Image 1 (cartoon, rainbow, N blue to C red):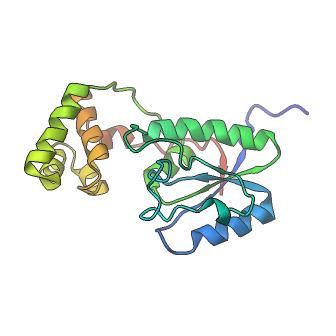
Image 2: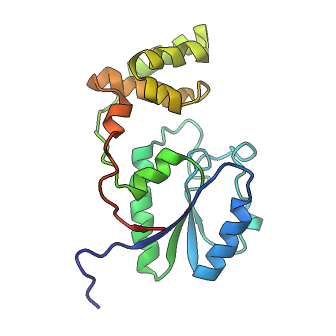
Length: 198
């Protein structure tokens, strides 16, 4: 069978805050629709972060394949751009096997990056700058670091919790390297849907 050039694979998405019943509902939906679940949570990808993220235990998965759970150690710099790239590969793979890709989780930017085909600027990295920001946070506190971000990128500061030091530092780093706030780079990104997102 020839797939039309304009073909967009179906993608099911279930989002919402922690502890509202997404897990059990997602299992029931996955069984009904022959789906494989992709975690859309930015923290469940890390090993050991189970309680605060309400991560589904292996024995609760009822045989449904789950992806992007427990893949990295907490010090790995997993980003929204990498999440998007991994999801695109998983969506293609799951669809090619005749199953329905199903993103479940509550990290809005991560899920939107897939549904709306965000294009990320490869702004590079500056490890010395990151270390300087980490030392600043250790000395003056998370809130002081967060205020640094608010001074250059208030929209990202509104989106990121002061305790999310890694992402606060990344937003500061993007501004440091490009002179453009991360929030401005994300503006107008909702241009085309790469999947039939439901």
